[in-house]
Amino acid sequence: MKTKLLLAGWIFAAILISIQSCKDDEEDESPEFVASSKDFADFRSWTEVAVNQGPSPSLGEAHHGNDETVTRTIYVKNNQARNADGKFPVGTLIVKETKDGDGNTIETTAMVKRGKNFNPDNNDWEWFMLNVDGSGAIADRGAGLMGGMCGMCHTQVKSKDFVFSK
Image (cartoon, rainbow, N blue to C red; front, side):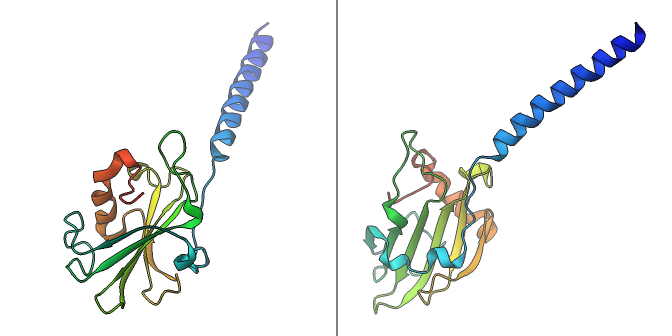
């Protein structure tokens, strides 16, 4: 009798472990997108969703060229739109190219919806600094890029899934 109870206990424990393992596998199947430089290579051919000229109070000193001469162009790959829940899907790529009054690129920043609980405080967005040569090469990246400044600023538009321009 004692052996049967012990065996039943082991079987029950194995079933519970198996069920939890299946749940973990389902969670692990959620999509994740890890961007590389090649994903940004042709960003100037993407859909332009905004062109802003002059200083922006929301930028403060976080970005270069926040004065009356600057132009900031926002590009979204495949003109990605929000889902029904108001959030952008995993894999969304957004680039902001800042040019001075002479048309020289002085800063290129980007954000990518990475998913997989990468950056839960900022709805899984990853922030990027790209080379200013227009190649799309990644110069720096991360959830805490610039000491967390990207995420802190974009929190202002948390209700718009952390996106200012679209």
